[in-house]
Amino acid sequence: MYLFSIIKKIYQIQELKKRIFTTIGLLVIFRLGSFIVLPGINPEKITKNSKGIFSLLDNFLGGAFSNASIFALGIMPYISASIAVQLLAFSFPFFQKLQKEGQSGQNRLNNITRILTILITGIQSFAYISATVNHDMLWINKTLFTVIAMTVLIAGTMFCMWIGERITEKGIGNGISMLIMVGIISSLPGAFYIEFYTKGIDKGLFLILEMTILFFIIIGFISFTEATRKIPIQYAKQIVSGSHITDIQTKYIPFKINASGVMPIIFAQALIFIPGLILGLLPHQYIEIQKIIQSFSDFTTWQYNLLFSLLIILFTFFYTAITINPNQISDDMKRSGGFIPGIKPGQDTERYIDNVISKITFPSAIILAIIAILPALAYKMGVSREFSQFFGGTSLLIIVGVTLEVIQQTKSYLLMHSYDDLINIKSI
Image: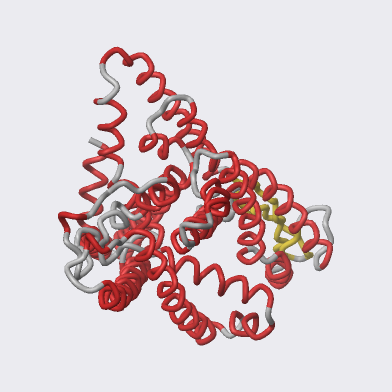
């Protein structure tokens, strides 16, 4: 009954209802695009035998990669471009200046990201065509197809980027994360079928154990995502009544343990695809180099998991550093008359906040790295390759993170609507 009452309240809020339907409509368009084959390819000749890193990439793109679709590269080039621009903004004064110019500077950074996305998509599209498309699959000449396909793939990625931006602006949740989550969820039914219907009834106890472990992993993910470290803040409010009386009000600044959210693992996942793309460009005679790169392109190898974990740890610290500014927090507290008990305002407060963030970021990075290698461990323990992706790593973290974000935004609209109703009742 409680669920139905929530759905009824959502339906009564016109803006929230509009945002939900907008999000669903854009996601449907995104999914339909993953089934539209590139012009010039014979659909009957497409072989869906992606292996290693290509299989992993195909899971995130909802089958668009193996379908040779117009959305075959999805949103990944845009994520790579965003990483590059954020690195530039962290390292070069020109880009740092743009970040401080408010909305106009952000618009210029967005335009730079879009241009860089086109360049990266061009490179990745050529690598994709070279690695996955052969002459037997084509209706037309390979050179002509390459030119047409690269153009279409660039347009497809830019359209996916536009869909993501529209979801963020006019829908619910972060659009880029939503697109990735939809691609992941679309592969879940097939993974369930492979895991539960191909193993047979004789593996029933093992399947029950799998679901029990998965349940506790999800609970752990939610706890990790929602955990916070609260810093007490006191505000001195002076009331004059014959003599000065100081009324101390204590509040808290909550810093999430996982302050960077799903972004470090998404960034790391975008970069981890590079070895596989390089592998597709190498001539066949470079066998030894191909073997080395192949070891970094299979999510079950220790080389892949070591590189993936290191990238996640690096991006966790990097993304936390660019999103949380202790100096700005300290200045805002000082201007509003707030202070941390036992800590002097100014530089001491800044150092204290920076120390707290560093202490919670390190275990967060380690936990994210452990989460990243859980699918490989599940696969080694007998879980099917497809279903093991949902035991951790990018798949489960993105699903949990995006779901919680959507729930939080929905709750905010419901609370705001309840507050407006309360004001209207009081005004009568």
